[in-house]
Image (cartoon, rainbow, N blue to C red; front, side, top):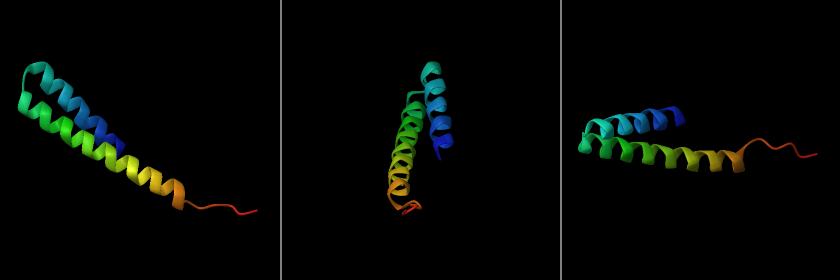
Length: 54
């Protein structure tokens, strides 16, 4: 999932360089949403992961 975030971020940067403001804004928005979903799932997995109890 983090890979998709990086891909959309790169698309946003390239589109921004070439002046495609609409494409850059939407790609950056998608990257932001996927990144926050990744963070939420990561925190959940930290708390619900397997634990060795003694």
